[in-house]
Image (cartoon, rainbow, N blue to C red):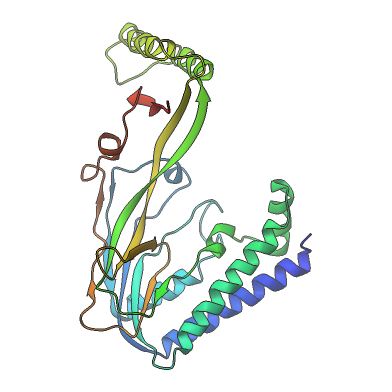
Length: 289
């Protein structure tokens, strides 16, 4: 099992590598830098799907400062909760002829993985939380895990987009009916009156009640959306990664098309209608059968 000393020393090495990387980037040949400032997020915001997310584009030295601070953003600091993960989408284009920055990035990500593995050696969740926060007070563990993604080949394009995430709960027909029975006792301000609300719930119960007793059901509720980077070489040779931290493009070439992260609006992408057919759309209940 990982000791407090081991966790602390593993983290200290990781944070030292991040700081060295930031210093090396400061003194490197930075061709361009863009940072996309997102609104502050509360703990409650992490649990729901927003309708709109405005994005503010930052460029130049200010953008570089924000990108480098983003790499170091692993502590609670002024945040009210360690569960709040601040996203730092951006892109830094850097000339790296001797690939020394690439070697540093590989080492940083290796240190992140090593730190993560040392934490996951502790099997019990409560013991893990206690051990980590005794060794590194005020650490946001998931923030420390986040890889710094980079590319040193010459892609056709590097573009930003929004990815919608979901929380999933699998349940039986009996459990779904119990959930709906509880709903009967709730008031709903979106309906005209309580009687109308009861009729809606009764209709939903009939729908679930008509299913086979062994039916497998799932609630797949959309939660937050997160920025991601799409790297394309050809129509078939492409990949995407998280944009939670600024993406680094090494030895950029003029032919690579660089996109921007635009404002998010749920009205632009209706995932429910395009990708899912819900048994009860109100609670995102789908029949897996």
